Image 1 (cartoon, helix red, strand yellow):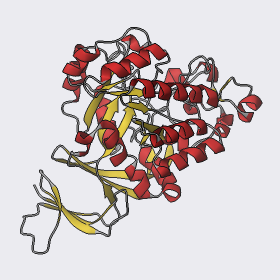
Image 2: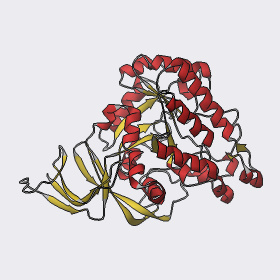
Image 3: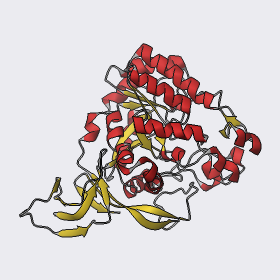
Length: 413
């Protein structure tokens, strides 16, 4: 079935293109030429929409296996598609962790009908505890090339060194949420004036900056490819920028919500704002924005970490870390579009993450079509996730994904 997309404005990393007509035939998306003889089954007015290559999220979580009540694989597939993502990287932090062929095969069987292509990150150490190694080479024979401990940093330098060496046997990629867990011990939010005023134990920038420096020095020694996830501090950005100038194979991403909130927002004691790494200060946010603009930071991620009601509805210092971030991703970008521009934002969720994963990630013929002006209410009725741990729940949001084209399918959201 050929679908005509009338007056659609494509965005690429360089600019927003003038409106043009495009035809989706099931096998490709091409510009309509004068005198095009292809038979059109459906015509869609896209004059108020933008579109780009299908979005890629380098960091999302499921509760399945083990905690399906937080997010099942079925619900995650649905919410990824509804949020416009054509490809996503799944973290290994489940129960049991994603660390054997059995888990890999189980997840692939559950996700084979997804509209979104799934890249599975396998645990680099058993149960993501940073101690014993998983069977990295066997997992690679199962098709896995991304490894990491997800929400847990690989804080043991010997383990990090050896994992980087193992992965070079097949050009594997190590993802790490880099911070020193001992410097962050018992921390609830960013260490600063606000944490002192609120009487909460702070997590200093030092916990991230020391770990980033250590990991980069190990990478320089061992070689390999390292991707640093959810960078949040000015010092970390500066260290990554210098490492890239030296030609090191390092990439980085930032959580979208790090660009939208600061530690001052924690004064409300809203547990939905309790995340790791925590929201930092204005100087750090400015450094993150500069890092996105100059290419130091390669990608923006949803860092979708669904939590059940009970784990958030409690005293702040006992509440779980994490925020659901998929369906609010586009509304978050709308808030940043004037400051960062649409071409830059799109580059950080298309070409940027594609380069992190490797050239094959960029070959998928897909399209995310969205309306940046549409208002909608994010509530129990519209929520596709099994969790609602976001400060924007029951709020009116601006920006709605309309269609996703992927795997030869055209789906209205």
